[in-house]
Length: 131
Image 1: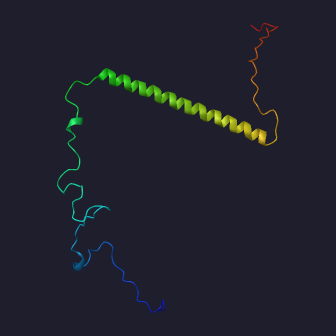
Image 2: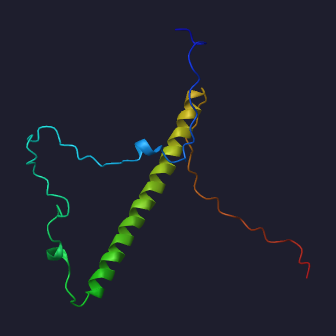
Image 3: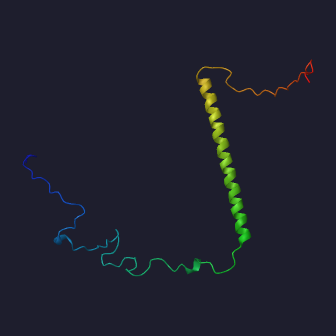
């Protein structure tokens, strides 16, 4: 069959409702692989909850330990601050090492920064008093 002999595809509106012969929708429940043929699979029938009662995990109406909660929040904040400061320090060291390595790989020498002691400032007493 030649491509020219094929009929043109029917264009349908994706928003339009399906024709009446296709409107009998039915939800099918598929069996998992390995499930018995007679329908006795371990899932609960529709209407029953597969989860046990969660009331055993609920907290009672007891007083909240505000001091302990605030202590834990403060401790968490301190730990997060330490982790952030460590990450910033580490990224700065990696940038310094990358720049130093770029300097060496470009063939230059004396790339390492040299720390010099601060220069003391010498104040010279003016010879002439202008006041």
